[in-house]
Image 1: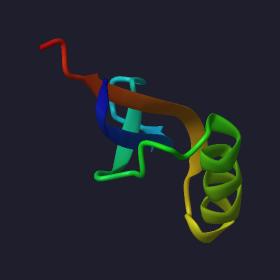
Image 2: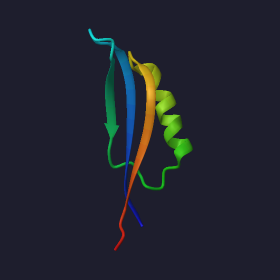
Image 3: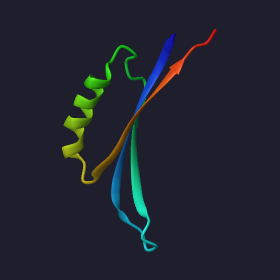
Image 4: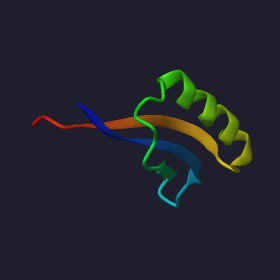
Length: 67
């Protein structure tokens, strides 16, 4: 049974002195377990223009109870 869900949005914030990408992460916990992936993408689409960084990746982490 799905018990918890988390949304993690990763943004690029340029490169460091060694040429490696600088990544910024925004996490949203306690996402409704009934929220569909399409609904979460709609939220990310609305939030992305409000950030000063470029969108790199979006992850959803679901926690399931096995017992």
